[in-house]
Length: 335
Image (tube, rainbow, N blue to C red):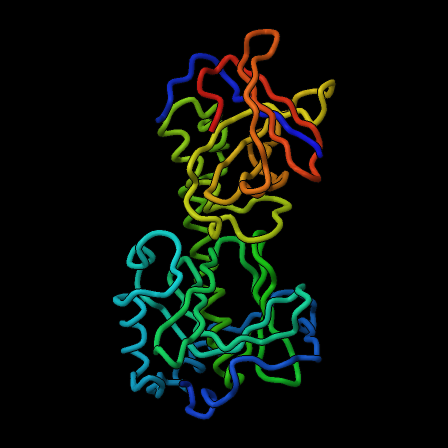
């Protein structure tokens, strides 16, 4: 049994307060034993503008004959009808559907070799992953990935025409298309919109140390902007589910953390979600955020105390974590 105590920083802070029918007949999952290889030069796969233009002309959008709906009908369905298990803001806020396809997907780095049948939907700045419930004719939410910082690689496997996507906060995923032209079209579209996403976020959060303006987060507007920043920009050394999939952030605070009673305090950002407590750090120049760990809410215990110098402090105890202490003069240091 270990414990960790957390204290917010600052003083006198105010509380802010389908492609083809036969593809559908494939079972929902199958086993994969082969592994892919990267493009010959070992780097991201790319195709020329001429190739991309030819692909677009050669692969017209055909009706997708499942659930009795055309391709356009399915795109409209995604934007207008409820998606089972949906998380986050209204799907309409992500913009128009750029492209969508029935594909097969495997998450690399997991013990399971299962390949899922999915419907992949590209928005201008995000990639939506849906699985299909053929019995109830509905889509099931599987994830929404930011294109910012994403990379695309072409793979050669014996199971199909495959490419791989990876990023700083997502597990690598292998995506198999119906044919090579469909794969090339997806790679072309993704590369284009990844570039747009990187440009967009560099304008929204330019390299003039936006974190230096948001820290210390001593007002509500700063906290809201900092949460927006954390859910939009890459976090170094991130592990587990992407931060966008943890739900809405309930509270954020800058704190000081010590893992043992006599240890030195370290500056941290503490972000509370409905099921998780996330610890982050910011470098001295305030240019990057680094992941420091996550604690499940249902496995921790909180004990409030007052430090000898009058600063408020609380301890977090849970199995498998070390002792942490924090202190502050802030009257609202608990979450």
